[in-house]
Amino acid sequence: MGKPARILIVDDDQKILESMRTLLQYKGYEIETTSSPIEARTYLNQNIFDLALLDVMMPEMTGFELLDSLDRTNLGTMFMIMTGEASMEYAIEAVRKMANDYIRKPIEPDELLMRVELVLKQKRIKDEKKLVEEEKKSLEKLLQHSQKMDTIGTLAGGIAHDFNNMLCIIIGSAELALASVADDGSAEEFLNKILTASTRAEEMVRRLLSFSRLAVSEKEPVDLNTILDESLKLLNPSVQTNIEIRRHFCESALPIMGNSTQMNQVIINLCNNAAHAMEASGGILEVTLDQVTLNEKQGRCAELEPGQYARLSVSDTGHGIDPGIMQRIFDPYFTTKEPGKGTGMGLAMVHGIVKNHGGGIQVKSEVESGAQFDIFLPIIAADVSEAAAPVKKASPKGKESILLVDDEEMVTDMTQVMLEELGYQVTAFSTVKKLSGNSASGPLSMILL
Figure 1 (cartoon, rainbow, N blue to C red):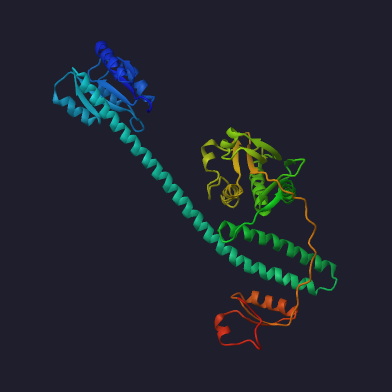
Figure 2: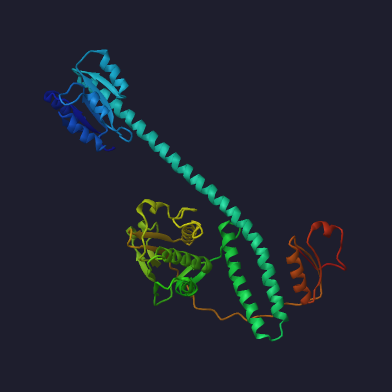
């Protein structure tokens, strides 16, 4: 059984009011009555009634004038006009005023009940149609969002592929140069810096490929304490001097099943957003990591199952988030930053990464009082003690013949030099056309495409 319909009866005849109240209440409706059209207008503007029965002739204003005085744009109330006049003019006027029904007094009880039920049925159909339209609009927005993300993914994948080729050339050339320098301390140092920066750029490419669904992000047991420490070390030099960073680490390890590169991205993005919110006047950026137990109620709030979670909190004392945009902060492309300072993808990426890690996000903010982002990630039972540094092994050498084909000529040249340094006999081509017109000398042991 649904909630009983609420009906307002407006008539200056007290006997009619009471008799209709008694009849409709007996049928289970919630009834309110008034003999004042002015009072009725106040009630109706609250949008709490399903149906209003309006008498035409009343002292303060007519039922038609009462209809005219209402803003019915978003009003969910249905209207039935009642009159003791037999004139057809009133019926026509009821239609013009877009009343839902018209009935003449005296009213037979059975007829009144039947007409009331018919109008309320119209309302139920109207409400159902409105819900369908709202759901349709919601699905259209989801479709547009999905198409937008697919477009971004395709673009990211293309950029990542081209960028990866350039990095391959940079890293390979730096390694070759590093192998050829003869104990030159300064040159070796600079080359190592090139390799370090290029390796970080490789991680960015992997993130782009992951975002475009062209690569699967591998997860392993990692300690959030370690990742947070590394992230803040990277972040610290870029934060303005008028912003104080306060950090609170958990005393024990907090192992999660995650991707350390992506978790680093989450921390950096949240901290950069917090720092930007305090850019003008400075403030305190506080990063806290602790272990919490979410009960059933708390889990529902964060869309998570009850259990043990690592909670990463990033808060600031900046300008806060306007309540009007709170629902949009995780939307792709949405940003309040001026051109050149934000793409609108930071929080969208954070949201995607956290959800992909089985976690949840809660945001608390007040205008001019800062904001706080709480990230919840499920804790696992695993040993995340640091493994011994891997022993660097010499690259295997050989004398076999290799056919190398790549459409990027610089990649082909660099790879050929590296393989020949290892003793292999390499025949390299940058196009299939050149390959078809030539052949490698001797039998091939391997073909690299």
